Image (tube, rainbow, N blue to C red; front, side, top):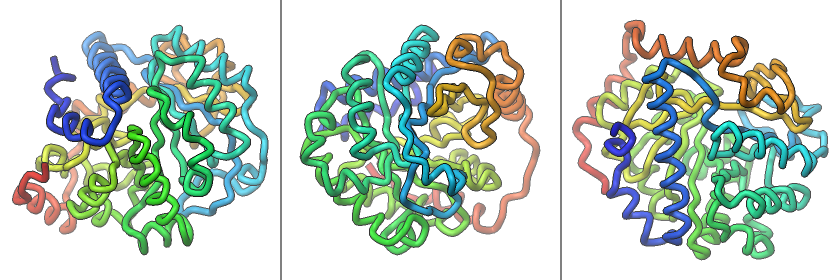
Length: 343
């Protein structure tokens, strides 16, 4: 089966050295199920949600480069109600969604932790990823220790390069917060990873073998690349995948617009149901067109305003328009082909 071919057993085994085996088994099994869902949908020619993004809040004290959230929303302290969060996950599970991303704004704070804990404890058969700037964890990680050790919770720390680069994008002290939180998470044998925003200014750095090994050595178990801010760089990510970049990486890699880089294709990306903090279901995190309330989650595949994005991308994946590689991309392709295995 395709999903097992792309699951790198060596990288999973590496994680056993510093991750609780029960936690690792939980996340590997939900990943396998997710990739099987996408493969099955592609074979049947259908689209339906395979993951859910839940916006716990839009509040955030940082002003990161490329952030799409308006300043007025960043100043709004409102947090999604427990009732709405419960209903979102309940509807998602009914639609066979097993992976949930808890997002912001900044989703980890004193105000949101009770909500995160409620979801993690109420739905142990679901897998929750929390994308965070790690500021709260770096300062108050000890107080959240019980929650952090939950077998179905993975903290996903935002880091956009080494210290100078990441701090220039995310603000002074951001890199130190991430590495401080990573140290605590590793002590607790947590399964945690990183998210890096793909931008013209950090493209080479975050795809360099040195950066990937840097994350691995500090206990990170995976890396998400977010191309939301720079979609023009997606073709370059495809070129790297064709050159064997994924199999040479010491970490499992995932691109939000291409899926995992072992099975890169617009056909392979996750199909996302996005729930805003007020309970409205949106077509997209950035466009924010309302398609209905939580009752429509199981119907999204039949709703053109949601499904068209995934159908269009799937068609593009089968008939990808030719494009010329830039000199930078051509160089990185040669580097990928020549680089030794890193694990």
